[in-house]
Image 1 (spheres, rainbow, N blue to C red):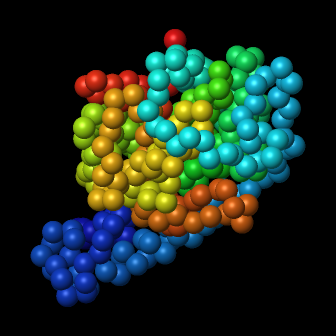
Image 2 (image 1 turned 30 degrees about the horizontal axis):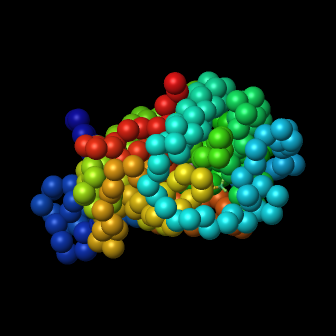
Length: 336
Ligand code: MF3
Ligand code: CO
Ligand code: CO
């Protein structure tokens, strides 16, 4: 006699929003949820939480702040940790744009150099050293260093870390994803970009997350147009992330940038009715969507910097500094 055992239901990932017990199951069986996948979903989610807790990123040892040669021009906060407010303008003059292009091109170059060093076994502190030295070699100051007291020259955010991870002694592991966020202060202007890299052999789910997050940035950039409200950008990003059931981080936004690292101008990556300021030709700001495999919710490590997903599932991010042009956007953070 042949007994056909059905595949165990617990192997399937339940959807982000679960049905009520008496509603039809999400699997399409037309049975009530409580009679179908409810129990299996509970097992799946409990087992996954245990696995995620066990594999979570742990803080390592943070090395001392790196030195910047005295010949390099520093931003106002380099000594004190506290940035001045600046003039609040988000529209650049032609002369400012010349300097801004140089700062942004330098950031893109440091990104390429540092990205090439990503591999299993290298510590995030070693990546910080590479980026720091490459920035100084170009005559730039690594903007994160002592910005509001941040202790390192770049941000390195691994797996469930959303952003602002502090480089430390943790070696990258085969299968990790890591975001490098690199900002360079050069010629009196900041250029800010970030990208997520695959470390060795990475699972298909994470590869999709990284690909879709890159697409979110591209779609956000494509929504830039003078005369349109800023929230067109978040709408485009959220629409794409929604198709995959991904969460769009709400606690951290893109920002105006220029002689000041973060101007008060905020660029949300979800649709926010309040972000109705119109884009203007000559504006410079970043777009930097953080996309979570699961819930959009974030939590903070006790170091008061490292932002992680609340559900410990992975998060990816890409960032460019962009200029609003006559009919669209120019990406400034490219190598020249
Ligand atoms: N580069 C980050 C951004 O995209 C900001 C880093 S601030 C730091 O806005 F202090 F954490 F470095
Ligand atoms: Co950045
Ligand atoms: Co930024």
